[in-house]
Image (cartoon, rainbow, N blue to C red):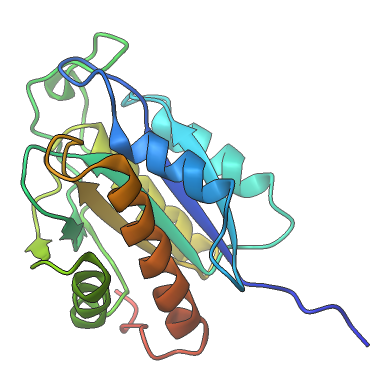
Amino acid sequence: MEPIIRPLALLTGFGPFQGVDENPSGLVAEAIGADSPPGLDVRGALLPVSFQQVAPRLRELLDEEDRNPVLILGMGVYPGRTFRLESTARAVLTSKQADNDGIVASSLGPLAAGDRATRIEMDLAIELLGGVARMEVERSQDAGGYVCECAYHAILSEALRRDSRGLFLHLPSLDIVPLIEQIEVVRSFLGQFVPALRYGSAEGDPV
């Protein structure tokens, strides 16, 4: 009997940066990577808070795997009070905040290949995430113009190259939703959403 190969998901987050000493996205990614939902293999990884380093590091992580993930889910933190799913990554980054290398977006040109949009059916993602979070989930077309948006653009580009699907989730700060709750929300979301992607019910049309 051939061994059952569980679907793979890559889950990324970030560490501290200016104004954020404790970043839930990196903590959640590491926790779920160490304890995958039943039936899934989740690799949790940190991406650098760096406009210039984030895309190469993402590609390295993907190249290290022996198979393409069903889902690449990037995460970051934002100053809101709920979970926020991003549908679009713009090629022109607008944030005025410097990254951890001291670089600001205005010193960079547009990202290659123009704006990107997820190929995931957002209505289903919103429904599943809202169900496990037990709160209204925000749908957004503005990923913030900072390294999060740069990472999301790279995620969508890599997902297209590898016949995967990409999505980005902004998490609230830990004083809004405690870490243990954030871990459980994201873990439960992956447990429901990745199988739906694998069997085609959560895929949107290619863009």
